[in-house]
Image (cartoon, helix red, strand yellow):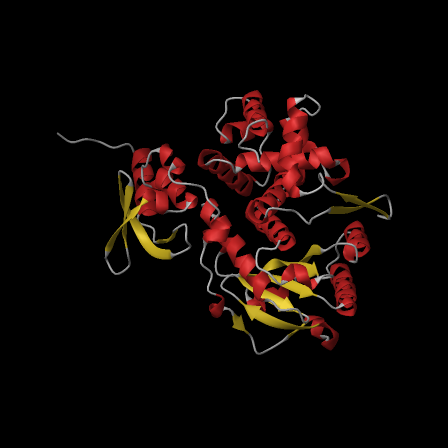
Length: 415
């Protein structure tokens, strides 16, 4: 007897086969990588095939969360595999060999100007440019934060590709001011909206860090991502040690923004809360404190500089918020939170944003839901509507998600 398979099912089977046979990078919690194809999942183990046709068995719980998500989607593993093992702190647990960092012989002359001369340090995923400050600590921080994203988000490594992201460390006031003038001229030459140029110019000397668009020729020549992070280094003590609070905050927010991709104008509602909360969560969770204030320029001429912060220090945020929520002095509201912008913030709102990010990263199941949400943002160029956000996090309604968030905030797990 012949069995006929519908054409649509054949397509699905072929798609599954192609994905399962894909050679990809598998990552352990400690950061070791292996290039291999997925053969099968056997209970608590996964069988991989290397390019040399050697079979390797690994424990599923030792694989990154991104790998486990891949096993669910393309290996037929049960959804419960995401709950295996401890979340840990992949950024702090990964082994980074700083001896692989390469000091480049040629300096970077930004805009061809000798006034903007930078030494260069190349790592696997970053190009660090310095006007004098040592680059090792920030380079290691960047690589650790990169590993954290690759550990938690399935598409991150593939989407990143073979490019590097550039980070500037500028500790000379005159060089920093000259760089600000260079960037203003660059934006004008690119015919960027005048409000964007004005706001960037006003905030340049105020901020501790900002993001800049790189010239196309630099991006092509050095195989870079098109946006760079610039640190205005006013106190180099904060940059001498790996995983210092402010660099962790900035790099975490930058990596998440890159993964979310460009958002449509109508789809950006919620992006500020998601990105800001994530950056504060990583800063406080990984370093135990926060050194970051939110700075913004408002008014028709962007001449109203505002600074926003949470409670006294990162160690007190959870305890203080938990008490306020228990006493009904603060009521977490998921939909309202997604609408908040920088100008709306006060200490309570900023800490609420942080608490939601903490909630999303508090268990393997929640983190998997958050990673799926970020994938949806990447594919749709918009933050999901509240109900879709809730469903991606595993709930039938916004009310159910909000209730679970509040229960987390008032529990001993929020600390």
